[in-house]
Amino acid sequence: DTEVTQTPKHLVMGMTNKKSLKCEQHMGHRAMYWYKQKAKKPPELMFVYSYEKLSINESVPSRFSPECPNSSLLNLHLHALQPEDSALYLCASSQEDGLAGGTYNEQFFGPGTRLTVL
Amino acid sequence: GENVEQHPSTLSVQEGDSAVIKCTYSDSASNYFPWYKQELGKRPQLIIDIRSNVGEKKDQRIAVTLNKTAKHFSLHITETQPEDSAVYFCAASKYNFNKFYFGSGTKLNVKP
Image 1: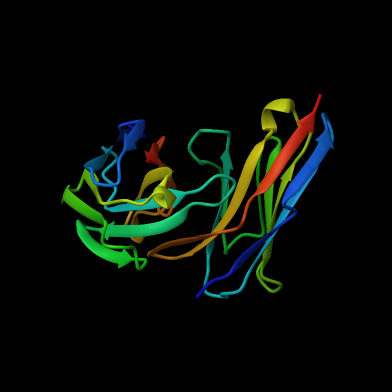
Image 2: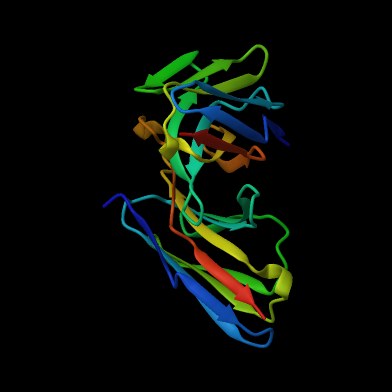
């Protein structure tokens, strides 16, 4: 299985709602990422988990809360979002162990969740 | 930190022509350089990558060249087809450092 899956595909929420985005991979990758992508812009890194521990937080507002319940799953909990948070949210994963060789740094992206905040 | 610059921002070519997209990076420790293709509304997909121990890599109509001294790398697409139309992003990363620095993207339009 060489896929990263994300649910839901689309999400519309109000500013007072609480929702969660989910990401799953079964490639044995130990690094997982959340990106935010606005139209016509590159993906913007939000969080990185390495071996289920948060290793990078790019100064993301606390209304975004990541969670890594196990090595295959990554969640992004959303609360009190603003309309400017509307974007495509991409999950990605990559192999962590450089000793494995091959495409150990290759990042696989999920299809994304299109989020609209009203 | 790393800074990746990408040019041009838009590129229009006739079907069958070649297309070249260029990126420069600032951190000499970067050693992994992937290229992603993103079609409208879809996920970025890796199309080719290169590591700093080689100067060129080819995969059918796609090639990437790397000049470590000048700190730049380029994507070359030959015999372009309409289905090559998409946004292309370059990126740079370091060994076992889980951060990818993306270029600003190039919108490639291949006219039939």
